[in-house]
Amino acid sequence: MEPVTETPRDQRPYDLVVLGATGFTGRLTAEYLARHAPDGCRWALAGRNRGRLEEVRTNLTTIDPGLAELPLLEADSANGDSLADLARSTRVVISAVGPYLLYGGPLVAACADAGTDYVDLTGEPEFVDSMYLEHHDRAVATGARIVHACGFDSVPHDLGARFTVLQLPEGQPVTLRGVVRAGGQFSGGTFHSDGRVLVFFPPPQGLAVLERN
Image 1 (cartoon, rainbow, N blue to C red):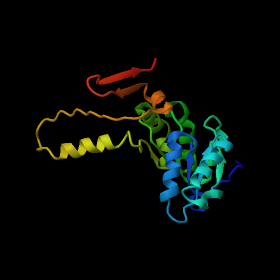
Image 2 (cartoon, rainbow, N blue to C red):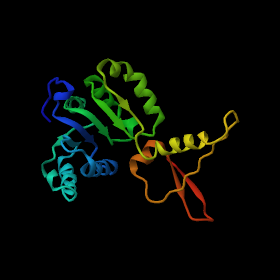
Image 3 (cartoon, rainbow, N blue to C red):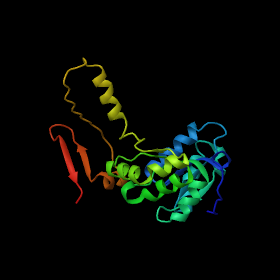
Image 4 (cartoon, helix red, strand yellow):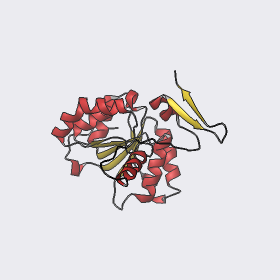
């Protein structure tokens, strides 16, 4: 990707870029945008491998043929210059590159420096805490909004618990215990992010916990 000079946010080439668009979550995000992005939204896909980005774009044309020319940007979480160029090219970055503790920090730093809004779906508390400590002041200075934990496995449980507690009488002690039952496969990023995978089996087998060494 060609270097991008410092440009006011409202004059940048893109409104939104999805980084990690070739992964499981990135593809789902791109498909959602293909269906629901508002008219006139200038968005793009970004990742390390242009060939795989082209495959994702081709798939998106089955949803909206007009996306045949959707811009593709090459950026690598291990290449700080490419992340800086990416952050300066857009108003918002959605990051689907995990595990975030291993690969996410440089992009948050680039967005904080460029005044670019940043969104991810991490469920890694250590990552969220360290990004706040390292980049909050810089983000405030540049106007960047850094928003973590915007994914399915991070938000509904908290909202559901809060809703439940609000239905209970005030001033009484509350003990909250959550149980989740789900099916399907887990992604490699989720496994490496958390280190534990809960596997649910039909009764009477019950619940198994896989630990990553």
